[in-house]
Image (cartoon, rainbow, N blue to C red; front, side, top):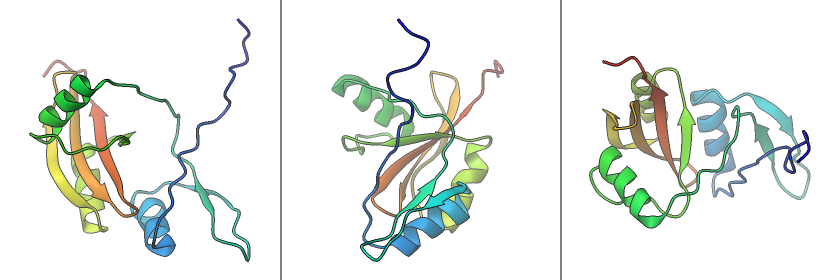
Length: 136
């Protein structure tokens, strides 16, 4: 095993019908920093920073459990983007005001985080989570 991981970066590539709306939402409302603009006459590409990336692989049973905890019913597709934020309640309100549809307000989970669920521009379903870990 080497110290160099076999993958250096994870990029979630989202193809959207309204590029301006998606960039406005993720960059200006959510606050993801713009890292690069690779746009050309052939098309538009904006790269936004989203912190550390991981791939969470869950089976169908766990996906159904997560949806029940966060939303009350199965709603997610094969891909759902989970973003850790400092204040999931405030961020949920800000994103709702900025164009997302709230599927479920923040709720405390059995894994000790405060999670909300939103449908965001560009067709992504988002979980916003704040790690609590404070024993309350």
